[in-house]
Image 1 (cartoon, rainbow over the protein chains, first blue to last red):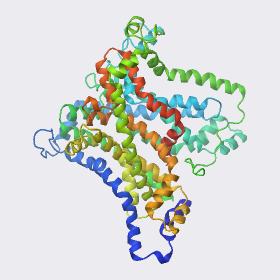
Image 2 (spheres, chains in turn green, red):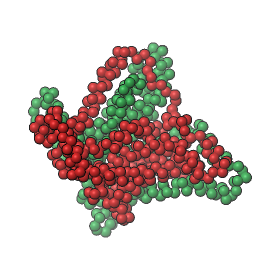
Image 3 (cartoon, rainbow over the protein chains, first blue to last red):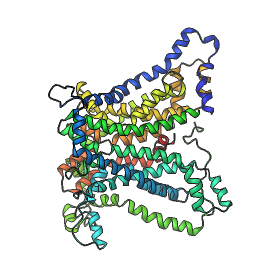
Image 4 (tube, helix red, strand yellow):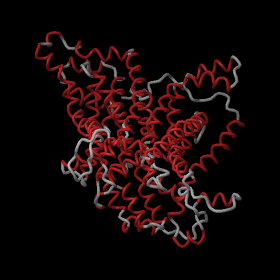
Length: 312
Length: 291
């Protein structure tokens, strides 16, 4: 509430005598002067390109011949393309994995680590550390671990598994899950951190009061802590979905979508079509579909933000 | 300065009452092995990076190194070209960081402190844009950098990252500047300070904690970027460390010891940053989600 007064007090604080018409029009211009450069740069490199991509998706752009409008032809081709559906289906798998496993594990870790025992800070940093290194590094290391005679197979053999080594990145049924496994290793720590921040806002006196009234820890968790974490959970779910739809680096590094496109995702499919096969119009159509799905979730996120803004 | 904190939430105490010794013991017995398992990929990378290739092929991935080969690091650094890639990453990241933070702090100030038509719309455009999948920008950005003769230069990456990251930074800074009490600015205005002076002398110093948090976070993001480096830079001399590592992998296909030595060198800057500025790093991440 205090922020409302802070925000509106801009002009009122200037002595009346100084508020000449010239001052007023100058004052009205001030925010635009601060915004001019950032908006220009952002429009040229982000907002403009977004619309230009949509336009390109209606053309036969290939980087060589003259770019011509071809209507919905790219989209007709896209929806008949098996690779598109495989990639789309794999994106759904990414999405489902991203909104379940990191949330359960991240919340679990956050609950365990939400204390001030010695060493906790170090443990938190440890679980979070995969987030600090680049996805290229994670892709390299996990590709190596997944090899037929790599770490994981050796470990399984040591634990008593017999038979042929598992081809984590060669088996069409396994490959997407294997890549997702590497991605989750990165994501769990991030979600844990967001929940730790969320737990800070849980009023401990309420939990305390419930305990005094004889509630079990499970009940106080279910009835008090969990509902209070609901807003942060919604944000985590939306961010996770957007992240899942953005997945590209690990797929590109670990398999380039193979074998036979079985691990492809829309982002990698688009990259191959647009930058390897020079089917730029077609690539733009893939990008547009991917963006439309993302934008649906971005709107959910923005609507929540708008509600917060309106409370002020 | 000391009164501005980033977490504006209610007073908290994470301290648990009645931590009985048994529960404390269970906590450690559970968490230490779990963390150990979690970090196995990192230990294995360390272990592999110091082994010789013969040792790996003879004894498999799991055995203890038969000798410590620090030469792997030298090989990756000089012959593998990592020294060049590493320098490139800094040449790209630091200017991009300066562009994005300075422009975003201006935008954040304007959006937080002035009422005008389109304020919320501009703010939401910045936030929404920062969440877009990169694929929708790839082709036009590639073309644009060609048209502007920036393709295959450092500037293509510097300007794109600088511009794109304005979105997220504006989001964080705008919300941070809104928490600064308005009386501070009013006092300066009554003293006759211009808006630009207020921005420079009052907003920037007071926003320092948020700027520090964003700087650590954005440094890591830009430094770790792979996709844009793949698209906007072709020449090997200009590659940052991410696409550089991918080339290193092509050069040393089966030589995992060299690959991993390179990997370890590549993560040093971001890991050091995280170790020393962990608090800022985490604040940066959670600031973006708490609103």
